[in-house]
Length: 559
Image 1 (cartoon, helix red, strand yellow):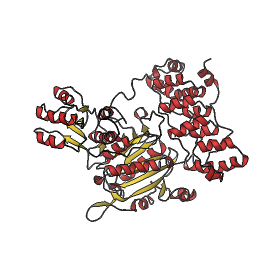
Image 2: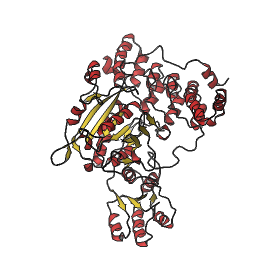
Image 3: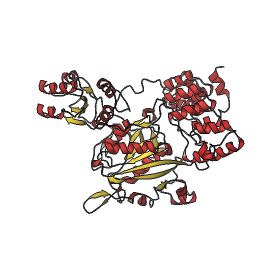
Image 4: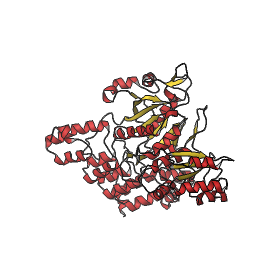
């Protein structure tokens, strides 16, 4: 029998039964979300001269809304003593756990029309500052420049492993008829209850990749669209996540925010009869990067005077990205007029939105790289901002002979039933492979189109199992394929908890390097466990908790 077969023959995969130190009775029920309130229509009131943000009003109002705050639960569980000021809690939904959220209100609050790259940097720094304290982040923002902010944050947040969701509303939340309550509620549920490690934009029951959206309607609640990529999730009768297109960081590097942005970028939209002087003036220093909005699939007037100015700018280091003026479609060299632009040094922008292209330029141009390296980076897919071979061809699990044999014994034959069988069996197969350290089997499962973060009947992922067993190479492999360090099984454990429980030092170090950390409640419980370990002289236990991020000296009084 193969090693994988031996693992499958066992009745139950590993569970840390003997060492169960890091457990809070409330933790399985609660997750925390930080709401960064920057301003925007959602919190505006009529000042007599038009709508404007009103400081300190949003929290007080949300406190009165039963759909967005469960006061009885807050009182019964002493919520206000356990969390920072300006904290609220959602009522319990059928999708557990319960979402607790804290509002960080900016001063002054901004109309999004006044947003600048400095404001993007501030938001990014706050996400980085509070990254280990919250399970997810919601950014409340005005709709006018929301697509720009979502795009910019997507590039600034490097190695992101938690959800960051930008949302707002078309009508203030205080109005009788408004979209703010549903948008805020949906964003909170998604940020708290699902590990979607991307910067997203949520609006009108749809979750979009942040760098794929554009605002298309100034008067409808359905104000945004993602022209060239379907939504990541939809919130209708049920919450449906399209996991096949959710991106995961395939790296062992820790989360960071790159706040250095180049402001010498701009958008030049071509139009019939545009003069050479206009183009020349626009391309002059200090301009470092241009989004050139062209016709159709990337065409421009075939005029030597225009092309000459574009080539001169490109030759002196100005990076020019070709994006279509059309809402949908891709820039490609189908016509001779498009070829002429590339001969002049222009880079094809694929199906990027102008907002994404501009934000990407600002991000890339700030890097300490050569011009050629920056151009290469602009043509690469960094955060799923344009369509390409992001995933590559996959076989369907329904093509697997193993699945087909099982299906035959169950008298199943249609594709839907085969896929259902595959979805049911694959997590256990992957966990069994992780149990015995079979990376080859895990790679085969991944190539069949499976997400290696999928959980088994106990909510345990292959990363949980590998962490329990101390299989360092398997842990490293899973992390490099996008496995999340924040998944919790039905007992409330993360892979880090599992590694700590079984005292696998190298695994703990690797998980910490990748961004794993204890939650607020786990830190409290770890402090209690530390005292017990110190009293019993368990130096190995103290070392493990210290490696996991617990400050031993401060908690125990040891020096």
